[in-house]
Length: 481
Image (cartoon, rainbow, N blue to C red; front, side, top):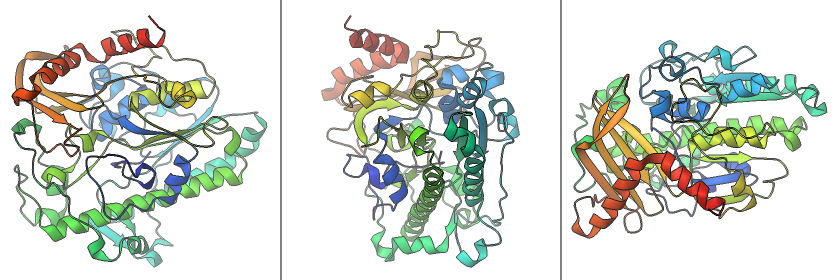
C-alpha cells in the first residue's frame, strides 16, 4: 500500500482522467506488476483521507459502518470488533506480518492493531529532520541512514526469505502487508531520482488551478495539511481561501517532488517483487497493490485530499493472481476499495465472505463490497454501476458522493454522529453535479443548470437509496432475476 497516490502512473496511461501529469510519472515496476494483474482503472475509495480509507479497506466496510471519519477514531471502539483482512488470514493459519504504514498507526486510532498480526510489527526509523514540504536527500547520505520506506522494503525482503522455505512446499502460508509512507508529505526521496524529471520545465502547472464554477463553498478544503505543517509553505502566508493559489514556481517544485516520491516508491515495490520472483514464490503468491486515496496537486487550487472531487477519491488498485491474471487484464468497470477484502479472501481459496447485514456491529466477518473475481473471467461484466464516497465537514455536515459512468453527484447534508450516524437528506448545504462526458476535470458544477435537472433528480434518488439497494439490484441482474 502506498499513501496519497494518484492513479496517473504509467499503467493508467491513455485513460480519460480528470487531470494529467507532465511528464508521465516514471513507474516501471508498477507497470510491470499491472501487466500481470487485474488492473482496476475506475476504483474509488470510500473516504479520501488516510485512517477512514484504511479502516474501510482492511475491514471491507464503509465509513458509516466503521464510524471512522477522522484520524483519531479506532474502528474497534466505534464500529465493532471486526475481523480485519490480515486477521482473517491469521485465523486461517497464515503467518500474518505487517510493516510500515498499513493502518493509520497513531495510538488513538488503534495503533498498528496488534490482533491483526501473528508476527512482530516492523515500524522503521525516520532519520529525516526538518519541516520542509519536500527534500531530495543526497544518495551518499542514505547508506548509513536509509529512508524509512527503504527500511520497510528491506524488512519485507527479509520476511520473504524467512517465509519462503515452508511457503514453497505448502507447509505454511503467509500474509505480508507492506505499507509505504510516500508519496505522502513531506515528499522525501533520494536526490538522484529527480533526474527522471529533468529538464525542469517539463513539469507543467495544472490546467485548472481554480475552483469549479458554481461550486458550493462547503465543497472546498483549505489544504491545511500543506499550508500549516511545513515551514516553507506557511512562510508564504497562503490563506487557503477559495481560488487562492500557491506561486507558480512553488507549485511546479511540489509537483516535481511528488513525482519523484512516487518513483521512489515504485523502486521499492520493484525490490520486493524481485525478491518474490527470486525466491520462487511468484507462482503461488497473490500480490495486490493499492493507494489509500487520490491526491490533488494544485488542480482546482486544491492540495492533498480531504474532498469528494474525482481526483481525491480515485486511486490505483491492481490484483495479481497467479494462473489467472498472468497476461494482464484491464477493466474500466466501476469498482470500490471495499471490494478488495472479499476478492483477496476468495482468490486465496478461503471461501466467500458474506455480505454484511444492515447492523453488522456484532458480525465479525462480512463485507460491504463485491468480489472482483468475475472481472478476471470477463473484464466487461458489470458488478456495480455506482461507486460511493463521503467526506465530513465540521461537526454536523457530511458530503455524500455517488459516481456512475458519466456523472459525479454530491450532496452536503446535515449529519448526526454517535449514536445515530445518519444523514438528514432534507437539510442540504450544497449540491454538486459534474458531467464527465464533457467536463472530465470537474470544472463546472451543473447542479443548478436546468438542462441537468432530470439527471440531478435521478442521481439524488440513487444517492439516498445508497449502496445496499444498488448492490441488491445489481445482484438480481447478475443472477438473471
